[in-house]
Each structure stands twice: as C-alpha cells, then as structure tokens.
Image 1 (cartoon, rainbow, N blue to C red):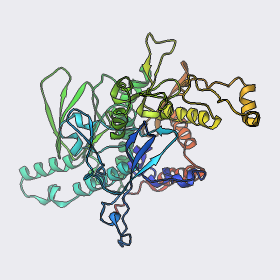
Image 2 (image 1 turned 180 degrees about the vertical axis):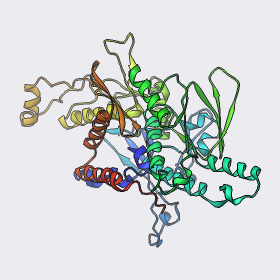
Image 3 (image 1 turned 30 degrees about the horizontal axis):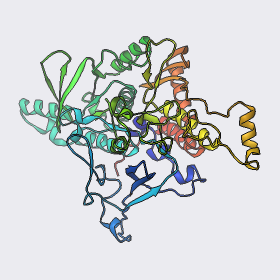
Image 4 (image 1 turned 45 degrees about the horizontal axis):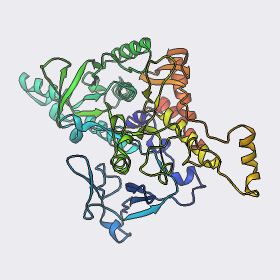
Length: 483
C-alpha cells in the first residue's frame, strides 16, 4: 500500500505496526541493521539504529549520529571492493555494533532498488520500497504542486508572449512526473497519482484547480506490455485504463539517463534519445540484493549464488553450507531466496516470483518447522530422537499420528494477482495453484482488491485505521498538508 500512502489515500502510520506490539511473545527485540555474519561460529553482527531526539537528551555516540529518518542509507562497517568481495574497515560505521549468537538465523531482508544500472537514477530517482520512501515522495509531490503555483510561472506575470510561453512550459515541467517500470508497483502508483491529481485539481473545489491542464504522468516500461505476469486480457485492460486517465505510457522504452530535472529515454533497438524535462522521477523497475545478502554469500559455497544476486535454497529454505554443522542453521525466505519450482504447465523449473505472497507462505512454513522442533541439519528435516520422557509430548504424538515425522518440502500455492489502475478500478487474476478460476476488472475487482489488502494487515488496529482513511478520503479528499 506504499503507492496509496505516497498520495495520501492512506496514512503511512495506518499501515505500520511496531514489532513489539505485533508479537508480544518476542523476548528480546533489537532494533538495528545486520551488517555481518559468521556462519561457522553462528554469530551475526548488528549495527544498532542511531537514535536522536529534538532535545539531544541522549548522550554518547547516538547523540552525534544522523537522524534515523534521514533518507540516505546508514553507513555500515562492511565495505565492498571493486570485484564485489567483502572487506572490513573498523573506521566505517555509525552507531554501536554488537554481536549476537544464534541457533537459527532467519534471513528475510528483502531487496533494494536496482537504480544504479542507469546513470543518475540512484542520485535523482525516488524509490518506493519503505514507508519512509512513500513519505518522501508525498512531500515531493506536494512541493511540486506548490512550486508550479508560484507567480513566476504564471502567464499574467509577464508582458510579452515569448516570456509567457516559457513560463507555461516551466510550469508544466514542474508538474511532469515519470514512473519507471510497468510492473504492479509502477501501474498502481500511476493510477494513484491520477486519482490524486484528479481530486486536487478538479473544479470548482480543487486546491490546485488552475493546474489541471498542466499535470502529466509518464510511465516508462521496457517491455511490450504492462503487468507481464498477468493474463493478456488484463494487460490490455491495464494499458487502456491508464491511457484513459491521461497517462502517457511508453512501451519498449529504455531509460538512458536521469538528471535532476530531466530523463533521457530511447526506444529499444534505436539509438535515438529523447530528453524530457520534468520534476520527479520514481524508480519502480527492478530489484537488487541488499548488502547483507552479499555478506552472507561470501560465507557460503559458490553454488549458493542464485539468479539476480539471490541465495539458492532447497525445499526447506536452507542454503548450502561449507560444513555439516553450519548446514540448516541459516534459513532464507522471501525476496532474498531463490527457490526453483516447476508447474505441470512449464517445461523447465523457474525461480518463484519476488512477491509478498511467496514471502508470507515461506514465513509460515519455516515457523511451523521450527515450532515443531524438526532437526534442520537432516534431509529431510525430521523429529529428533528424544528420551522416553520427552518422546510422549502431545505435539510429537500429534505429528506422528499425522505422518509428519519428517517435514514436507515447501510448495508455493499461488492465489492470483491483484493490481489497482485508478478511478476505483482494479485487475484481479484469481487462481488456486496452477488452476485459473476467473479474471475480473473494474469496480467489482476494486472491492476485492481492497478487501484482500485490508485482510492482510498486521492487526485489527491497522484494519480499522485503513478503513477510516478510505472513508475519510471519500468524504473529505486527500490531505495535502505539508509538515
């Protein structure tokens, strides 16, 4: 729901929940960033989050550290050479670094944006990976509107026609936004942007109604169709829905360069480059591994390196290890894991998609294995040999009765795909495993889309807050206050 939070449809606090409240059974929660790991010794290095307050009441290293809301990434004590190998420099780092022992290390670190592949994209693009990204983007969109409403870009401010034309072009540049990537994130964000501008620029009660003819949203996608993971009819519906709202969709187009106030794009297979002046560029095109994944791969055999910088895992989410003692102590799930699966309709196995649906099912699967006490060093993991007194626990007897002395392998059950396209319309591709059930588009699909997102929230508190945000948006519009 980051796209919705970026335009104020929902508040970012409504969709977040403190981990201490979500799971009160956690004995010891450490807020920090994993920066190193020793698989042989079963130790992980954690850089504690740098805390700062307005009063500066906290003394020590944290008082001099940058604010934790700073959009720039926190420096770590892990440094990478040009060849990608890991070296350590104790002089690097912000915040205290502690070392924790573990029995099982669960790696669910996700991915980062792969914007570094395009010159200037890392420096000038907004990302949409975290709630902080949506907060920054929301502020930037509000500033763009206010910047375009200033007198220096209004025609009445200038006496001659040439100056008025330049002012008009500059005003339109300040309201031109490019979204890079035609996957679910890019399509949903484009739809949310159209909804936002339609509301704040509408006549007669829009806050920026004089700017309604100047707003432009451009969607740049390298493929021939939007939402390539969906069925063909839904891909076509996504394209037509966005174009009907005024989105300029550029298919088969590569992003060549990103500047502070422009992007350079070119059609695939052509050397011609078009430069588009604009105000905001948003990266939603691809993923890259986070630094901790590179650090973990340096501790694993070469065969652990999977496609796209991910970590190869077996059916029990275990990566290969150098020794039998270390095998099974590390479990990798979600976007960082590369698990190949083959359906009956495919000729060869392929890696599971990097979606929340896969990550959620893998997380539940690993939790069941650990709660049941399987020995993760054996293949397949099985119930360990216990003493006569321990062997007659109710859980163990229940597992034996069900024939679960050995843990079954992970099997992903796809339940379909959802995407919002704006104007209270969505696309739904509902399926169970490899069996397609039905495809929906339009208002009914929008109701299902919202129902699924509401049901997937972390707590009933989040569900109530998000439902209230939706009602508030319908009744009073989106909040454009900039704090």
